[in-house]
Length: 540
Image 1: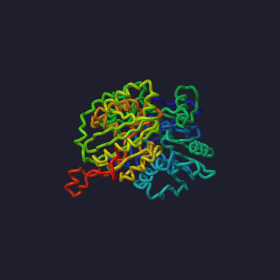
Image 2: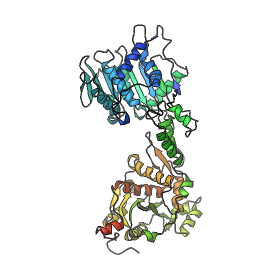
Image 3: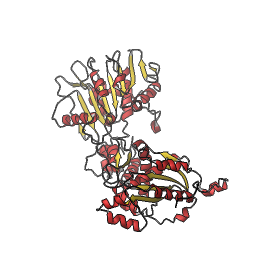
Image 4: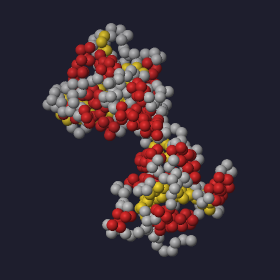
């Protein structure tokens, strides 16, 4: 049974404008137009677009129904905010087509706009597909790659991803601005809003999910204005907006909270999907803010430690290195700086085992009075190599790498290019394949997500390595507005070099598609070269 949610924020309808009246016939006209269109994706593809009651009550009715005495619409700016999978893009596409060909506007200029061209296409591409799939529209329009033309009124519907693309003197009748929170500047919004000045009843429609709580973005400005209107602090009948979201302190795992935030629950978004996302958020602490933002509409961002350490500790099984001899693995190295920790991690994807090697110069240990005794204890038990002198002993690191390379099949070595040194070149001279792993969020998101899933599921065996555990407890992450993450040395409370190296190794493992065959499979296929061995003598 579908549940009807109510907006968390809603601006008052413009009923107090002198002479204002509600034109039900105009709303019915919009609904009839929508019903000439068909959905284009997923299970709804080919099904007539019939707006739900909540869409009519909270979105279409207030925007298209309230009129001045002369019949012009009062609302010129609309803000529709809700969690994902509430049909925002489809609804906005239909509105764009209505403004193009059914709004009785000669020479209408309508734009699908977003912070980048791909995002702008999320509204325009479905609009074009719906127009071409509509028996009432396809013979009346001309569709091109980045525009739709309605010759009868000389109107156009175009894609726009930057203010510079809008020609000087543009006369904007309609604009759909998608995912406002990803706009890095206000330029595009300003150029569209200022371009409506000479139209009788323009409509700029903002559709978006919540942001991460930034206070300096165009999203924050518009959202703050909406809240002031909703609270009666300011009055502006030309701006109408709704925000569907849960209360900030609501239980994110209670299905009643999901119902409050998701007006399309059980129809556009299934409970099973939300249950799966909630279970992931419960298991993976860093995903909880993403779940709250994307699926509950709560403005929040990832903070705090990355890993649930109880789950991390459950991943500490026995590792017998001899049992891994000849097995394929991917290495990650984090050279940090010459006066600090260096980490070398070996990831065995078939066994889901990680072997950890750590080094730090003695001078760095002496400077760390707060943890010096612990570092010395780890060194005594063989978990940390403390090298003599002020600098990292690359000879000792290289000797260990050579030894590991003689025992295991190291497919690739992933390393941070910013801190690459002559050691990387020497590894390549020995025959190892060393690949740069850029440390941006675009590259590290996938291996970071892989690592947190492995930990949450208990599928990682790190052998209970205490130095790696210390670093796992220290690590904090950077997260972007889409929930992508990466370890952050800047935010972390202490050293995380072992985690960084492990993520580098995972990145190379994931990049190898498909994984290489197991040693047994390789031998059966005649690929029995055995583990890589260094050229020349093994360093002592």
